[in-house]
Length: 360
Image 1 (cartoon, helix red, strand yellow):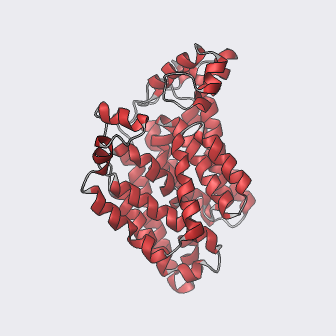
Image 2 (tube, helix red, strand yellow; image 1 turned 90 degrees about the vertical axis):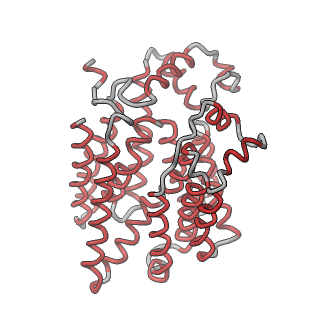
């Protein structure tokens, strides 16, 4: 497991470059780090993650399907057609599942890491948070979801910038790889009509209360679940969510409310409103469906706004001379927690000892 631990530690150490003022110098260091993260995922052998064998089966399935069936969605598999079409193209070109892994790692890394560098005042901190909380779950196992989630974050920025064609295009493409990306439509459209920060501060409490009544089983009994979720219930793979992201989200919601006036001096109101709503909905969904872990995909997708909100807050506080040391301490604590969380995630329950497929 040593390669996994080293990867997380190296990412943590690279956050020192957030203190470098030159953007070009940061970019020269940022590119090799991101290349390492992409290569680490793309070069992995089949079977070291939980879903690799299932993806290999999907590759073989797509290779045996006709082009018309794939384009029209005329197949029994619940997997989205965009991903299966990619597999079909690779198979028709003489490639195998390892080529798919490399391509998915490349496009996912391109989507995520370019966004961090462009939109975060502390891109290395954003990468550390991503590696600590998302990387091993998404890029290693849920590769369709990882790509769609990255497109979802881009879509929210396009919406904030009122580039609606790009917004819908990114959501549309993302939905062809994983339907969970459609959840970004909720904070986007809610923000057009209702933006009361106090309501969204306390919305997670409603989710906490609702979660006590196990709403997913209630919906199942009413026959109101989509086929994919129904399948998870039928095979008893409900699982259990966790409270960590809701605790972090609530702390951030309070901090964003306290420093809202100062944040508005540096960031657009529309951005803060949309991200605040997205963060609140993330915690709400997590708590409401705490007994149904699969719903965490929706919650964690929206929780991705923390990749930007936390750097926004740290950057703001560190501008204030009086609070600079306190702000640096806050940043340090969260960096250490991201490091701890990333290291804690490493284990046989999520991955096996690392192997490069070319060396098998």
